Image (cartoon, rainbow, N blue to C red):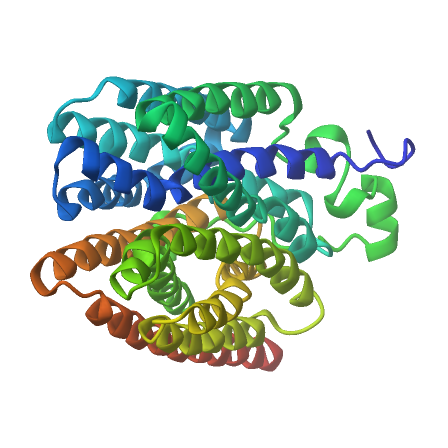
Length: 422
């Protein structure tokens, strides 16, 4: 599985990351469909049901910086295996819940902790350590599992909900978490290419040293502690942009179907529109990080965020199937690719050694943005019977995300100028 055999081992790392990301966000992405069945069966309010997902995000936000730091110490393999076990356990327990407290405990707390050991931190961090020149393309493939998994689970959940109900659907999610995350992680995951006598992108260490005149490929050895990260202006600009991008995207993922139904679109058509959005998100994830290997990543982020702003206005006015699919096209091609762009940019800015810590903190900001937007969307609907306020808030947040990305670019340019002057 090295260069001589024709397969760089880093692509097996991409496969493991692909599976863990797909299970994490595929199962969570289907929540927007599953919640409708739970509401009908349990008689809970929308805020009560959506609140569990917000609780999940808050727990994730609190725990994930520590998970990222621990992962830098114990490795990605152990982190992913534990995450797969805990995720499967949480979904299995959801098959027997009867009260909101039990739902919040399983979906909010246990699954929230489990998500820190899978999702956007372990797998993508490993991929970023294995690739430098092809980092954007490798991350694009791994992270494409998020929208692809969401689309597949959304479509499959429609059938499962009609045949085995939401409890049976959670049972299938439990089994898939155990099988498709734990086994590949234990068999294939390696923390970094140096463990196999390789360097990023597939060069043998001796060859890389000769080709680069003993210069390191990137700043892998630079240490980024939590305190150092939180004192960095470029980190804050990156994290705040990520916060607003994730908040708007998750609000749309969870509340898009109920909003469209409220606008007069049938439940079936609204669900199909959500699935179409998720399939287009696959193209978005594959395209944007790969494109950013050839242009500046911050420019790609600004373009993608601007398209999401346009999509937000389309969603507000989606009272016909024509406008609905216009929104689907614009939002579907611009949203999830941002996750790959931000992950690649974080690796570019902070290097490989402390990337778990950096990614953990960035995930905290993204999760907090998602948690706030998801709950406020449900709460605002319960009060006003409309989701428009949360959509306008999301548009305002995206504008701020663009501003912070511009600021980040200027901070990077200033640092480059100072380094050249020294």
